[in-house]
Image 1: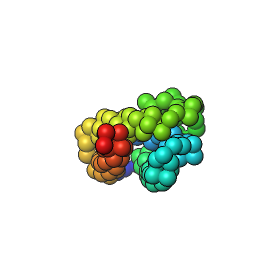
Image 2 (image 1 turned 120 degrees about the vertical axis):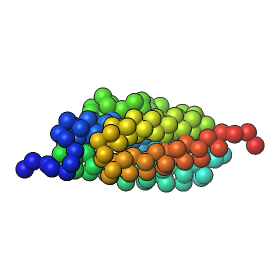
Image 3 (image 1 turned 45 degrees about the vertical axis):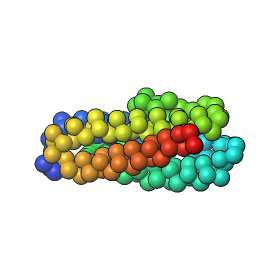
Amino acid sequence: MDIDIGISTDKRAAIAEGLSRLLADSYTLYLKTHNYHWNVTGPMFQTLHTMFMTQYTELGLAVDDIAERIRALGHPAPGSYAAFTRLSSIGEETAVPPARDMIVNLVMGHEAVTRTARQVFRIADEANDEPTCDLLTQRMQVSEKTAWMLRSLLDPA
């Protein structure tokens, strides 16, 4: 059955492509955060272990929302590591860095998610796709706030 939600087929495809990149960034960041939760060590272990769990839990819910929006626009959501590697602007973590480097890497990851969401927002806004704009605004707010909180851990006392 054809989709008639007031957004053209071409615009829905462009939005879905952008959301697929956001999904890949978010899932890659989810995996990186979960990895850090498992492997963090040092004097800030308890704080970071708990903080990373909060962050990966939020990201786990976010990827579902993003994927479901792609589906609502009539496109398949990417769902493999190969697809996420191809689409993501965030590199995979293959090492276990020190805690401070974990924090820096997560700041950069949240900033990357924000940049991707901002790029997709322009496309969705031009198409008058308010539900996608709302989703993107929420993602930017969470990622910007999370990056700020992580950066605060890096400031000298």
